[in-house]
Image (cartoon, rainbow, N blue to C red):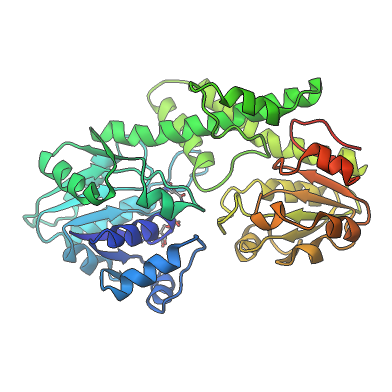
Length: 435
Ligand code: NAD
């Protein structure tokens, strides 16, 4: 099948590569000329394991092309995916500017029957909105089309694996013809297909992310109680997760969720609810807990170090999770800002996210992609992202390089008994401190 994907970001590029790998002919289109030039030069603008190999192989096979001529890309395919960003607007709802812009371009370029598929995470009603914008821009031309919702569930860091082995494809459509076409597109993925209407498909995405965010805030709240009663949240999560009704995933206490999806999608769901006169208090609490968690963590650092003012603090990990360079809503941002505002000198390590971090956190931080150099001469070391490099770091060497052997672990990486044996002052989340 011929597929055009508009928006060549984390979702568009990964989907483009995966559709191509399954034998479809794909054009990834983007208005960012620089990105398209990079891709045409064989460079990958984002960090995502396995993506470069898949992109190169499918370009060579002639199934994957890149273009900044979005109109021509629309005309060249039968299926048009919208995969542009839907960032959080200042009032919390999803900003649909980019989606509207793409709908306009599609309307202006339509040259025959097409299925327009919305992959961006969008509020209920956006399918109808896209349809209406396309219609307004047809300019009297006879062109038929159908709009479909096919939300995305991949996770950054494991995006290729998630896409190639998708657990389900949710397809929301009113037209039988469009439903059948998008079903066929997904046939090579051999996955469970959920057929529904557009509104339900749009809601499934928000419900999924809100549920996962709720699990994280739940376990973070539990971890805060554990700290006060002397319980251990890691053992607790294990005991809790063995109940198959609960499951053991997404029960790791930490410094709160971040990334390009959960923070904005929980806020957007609250806006969706408000617009229909419903107060979604549960998700409001999920957001509050998540905003408090980084501050709670800085207070912990402050207490253990004995005020961070004037202290050199090593921060290990900036990206919101391992194996990505994505800094959008990373918990490292409020934590580092708070440390700096309390007078700390921050030295930060990350293997891939430094350039992105500089854009959001700024230059008040000493950045390095050398872990040991970062901890050298610091008063304490703080873990924010469980990068494999951090999980496997040489603890003896880290201890030698620190002024004091203080490790404050926001990801519960290390074993308490091990840290006691190594004579670290070790604090983590929801577990007893080791002094
Ligand atoms: P992104 O910011 O990485 O990429 C968006 C791309 O769209 C950019 O390259 C931008 O230049 C391009 N673009 C904007 N306007 C355009 C236009 N008019 N024509 C052509 N290109 C245009 O975004 P992303 O992270 O890939 O997310 C895309 C959507 O998928 C969002 O709605 C997001 O919520 C959703 N989503 C993201 C993830 C994720 O992990 N990143 C997972 C599931 C769903």
